[in-house]
Image 1 (cartoon, one colour):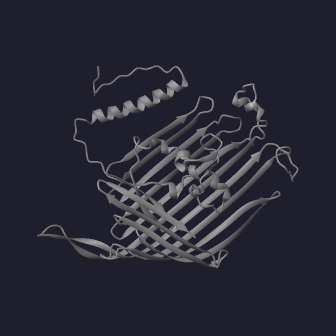
Image 2 (image 1 turned 90 degrees about the horizontal axis):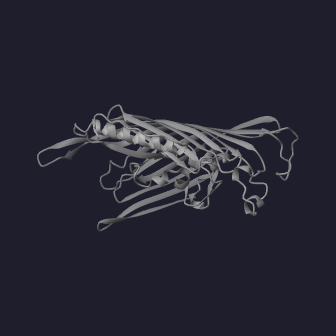
Length: 428
């Protein structure tokens, strides 16, 4: 018998796998109970909008709302990163795409490139605007009990009013790996918020990452897996027993103030309403990043490495990279011109970098600064065509003389009931 107001369930869990299934069943039944309890009331209309922010200019790129029914497999960080990857077989291990164009642009702190798909940072943050509080609980598992991969992620976001939204993401990953010294774990998360007023707008996010994994240098002899004797993977000897840790904390804040005009907009034949149209936008962006890397081996391996330059009982190396960037810009809003709808921006940016590294047993550091100017021609609100062309030149500091040109183009061509999407980009 089923009673939507009083529901009782009984089940038994005889193994770890049953326990996981039980947890999932409980979550599903809790959702069903909540829906059943509210079924006597008319459901409120739910409105949810999502987007990402890219670059120091905080360009908004609307994305479809994520669901558990469509492309759920792509939520796996490895599958989402690229269709062909080189990695050690378990979630959380260092990774590189086999496709050159799927690889991210090399970072100043090269140790972060191998962990790019797992890191919570500005590029991976999704921003929300919702009429009702929105929450999501995600659980991913795979593999047998002794080397399975697991990931938990929790999201909660809500609007205080129509203009202001805040949210939090907590993400935990743990993967044991099939062979010795392959385990990895990561705790990351973010706190984000947006404000969209008539004149003042702001976007902010703080992210944190603590990613650890073991290093084994591969198995000592391929005969253990190619020979006639079948060895359990966890018993096959490996070359080294190292430990690697990467930490990343990032703070991003962009805010802008616009000056505009009130423009009449006709609603019907008898009435009009006044609509605010921005003309000039003044903006400031702050981006602070702190990367830290440590590598440790409890002993000095002389047979695995071709050269061992230092005598000692252990390997304990560290490096760090910190950067602070400030950008001020002035923009002509694309909404102002009815006929030639494009935005034009000019900006000035200063960046300070500090490198920390170890030489012998002494920790060294050096700091440098660079200043650059640039311009952007863009159209972000087009229905059939959107583009972004930018150029910048560094004229002061360590990188004086460096320049960059970027172009991206997105188009939609209607084909009857279907549409053809075009996407092109390039950089110099």
